[in-house]
Structure formats: C-alpha cells, structure tokens
Image (cartoon, helix red, strand yellow):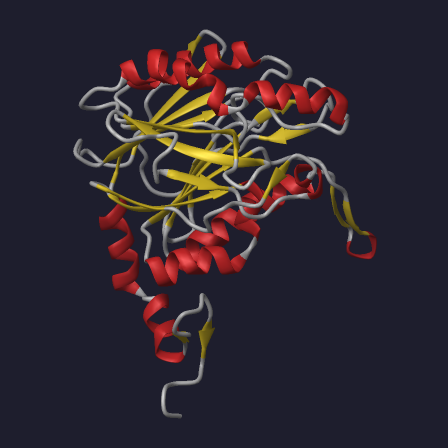
Length: 340
C-alpha cells in the first residue's frame, strides 16, 4: 500500500515526500492562495507506557509542522498517553499520571512558544478531571491567547465504547463550535462520529463548515458473508473510511480526521491510521498510511469557498429545511409545522 492516497482523475500538484527522523512528511497543496487554511495531521503512534516519549514526539512534530507553514496542527486521541487497556491495576495509575493537569507546564514551556503569526494552534487530546468527579476525555484547542485548559475551547467526548466507560465519563458539554478566520469548526472524538444526531446538529443547527475528528480507531474485526464471497479482517478500519466520506457528503461539510496508527504497547491492539481530508462532496482528497507514522501537510484549503461551491450545485440542507424544522427548546427535528 502506498504511504498516502489521492483520488484518481484530474491533474494534481504533488510535492515530493521527505523523511524527517521517524516521520515521512507528505505535503499537498489545495490551492495557490496562501491566506487559506494550512493544516498538519499527525498520523502517529503513541508509546504505551511512555508519556515523556510521547511529549517529545508531539513537540518534534509541531516543530516540523511549523517549519512547513502549517496554521493548525492536529494530533490523535490520547496522543499524550496512548489508549487504555483492560488491566485496571496498571492502567489507572498510568492515566492519572497522564492527566493534562499534570502537563500544563509542558504545554506552556514547549508548545506555546512555537506559536507565531503563521503557526497558530495545536489540537491535543488527553484525560482531565471533570468538575463533577471522574475523568473526561477532552480535546483542547491550544493557541497563543486563550485559556486553553480552563476556558471554553475544549470538547469532551460524548459517546464511549465499553472499555472507556471503565475509566472516563461522558462529556459535560455536547458540542464545541469554534469560529475562526477560515470558517466554523465542530469537533468530535473517535466513536462520536458514528452517531448521526451529533453530526446532524453540527451541520443543520450550527451550520459548521468542517468537523475535526480525532481518534484512536482500531483496524481489525471480522465480517463474513460467505455465500456472497465477501469478507474482511479490517472491518473497523473499513468503517472509518466509509463513515468519514459519508458524513462529509451527506452534510456537505469538510471532514478533517486525525487517527492513531501502529500497535499498542500493552494490549497489542492495532490502530488504522488513515488520517486525512474529505471534501464537502464526500470525496477523499488525501489519506495517510494505515501502517506507518506520517505527517500530512495540506496547504491553502478553501474551507468556506469550496463548501459554498458544493451547496450552490445542490443544497441538501435547504431541501431538509423544506420538510423538517427544529423543535423549539429541543435538539430534535419534526415534520410537523406550527399550526398544522
């Protein structure tokens, strides 16, 4: 399998890839206009256990992204700690050590000094103590000015698979909408993306231009349909590819996804990688390796303009609004109109 994938058809300007330390750095250019958004996606593996090693890897990746002119660098779910595992006696103390409260100084002294007029933000995920007790899975938008830890630029994961319910609670806030100079962004974490209500609220009620999805999404699960001669060992990974494309196309929004790759150091779980960018058409523009650590740099993405082009061609949201309307005071929709 090639280290990165691009859709067939039409001319594509491809910049050469380069290996820097353990990373293959792959650069692509969406347009020639430098005022549009440039993102960095860290398709990387976390060392487990290895908090300090992971901090070093994140910092080195940030430095590479900055050098390449990235505006926003995005890292996978649990990139600071790595994913949880079954043995609670060893896992609980480890994730307590990894809590973001314990690493504020590192962010302030190592990550924040990298910011300048071009390299503006890092999106990083980790554990934190919830205000009502228990741990939360939180994604932090770290920039030069905001209170990144205690402020509002934070999203807490809502939907938790069984193993995560042992260690974390569902989020205290249901959505995060972040207005930027490039457009309006919503946030989801891993399993969240499987739930239509959440993405529908982002797309229809909030009218985001893009969703940033970070994950530790696994590869392997078996599905068989023997009489149809169809089967796969990588069902979970296949689902990642299908769902991201579908969410982008159905809602006519960008999907910007950053997933972990590699093998878990304790459980041996294998993560799918496949970080990438899906246009509001649902078409995949670029996707990272499912096996290797790569840093994707995508320059000059016209977030608002390209979405508008898609809507001008065929506006799904307008047709939805013609049939359904939000129920006042609730996050739900009905076909019943007032007075009918």
